Image (cartoon, rainbow, N blue to C red):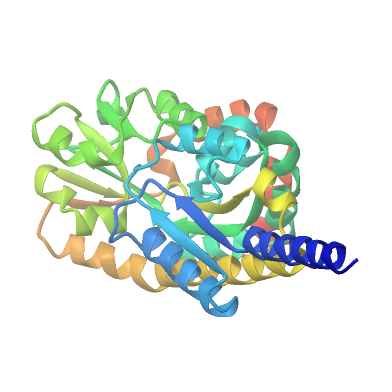
Length: 325
């Protein structure tokens, strides 16, 4: 009898120990941005906050600069549970959930602060609910980069001057459709290759945000900088749905709280710094031209015609943007 009790007690202790180990996680979070990028720093801040909040039970190892593959590959890893978390462009998500392409509507946002308010609307938040079923991931919340600008080798005085130019883009349909409507030759290219490609003429122009234009000195190899602010560039914090389903309510709440805080801090930093980066680029003395929607002519209408059919949320998102103008 004593032996039976001892065996039983040992089994209970072993089960308790195993359960304790199962509840402790070293999460892996992937993203495409370089180590010094705001998104990467935000991911690291999230990991530190989660570790502190759980007394070290949970930690997050951040893999920047495409160490785990491009975004399409990381999304596949999230779907299988091979990757736990990611900070990912909404553009990649739109490849699987086309409604999200509405965020790239040209001139949806008036400025960087307006973009931040759009991402906080009920309409934007509700769109996250469709991600588990459509993409196998749980959307925690939004971050963003700055608004998009255009740098070109040679003079650009009208959108017609962009026609036929090899123009580097991130390889997603909403951006591809925009530059096809202009008549450019959109050229997908990973971020690490952009500087050399622009320097050696492999591409004639690039679509880029102010942070990287300034920090990576893309302006050094352009003859014209167009401050167009033509498109917002949201990011979304994701957790694998396979991983999420096995977490306790307490762990889910901790991840939700601290990832949302990190994403909000990313947005705040862009709102504070984006205009300053553009001013610094302008101060370099390069040919700097500010343009608005009229610069792109009928390309905006062409984009709307395509995406009104692809995204059921385009109208709702425009209404939400107007309400927080």
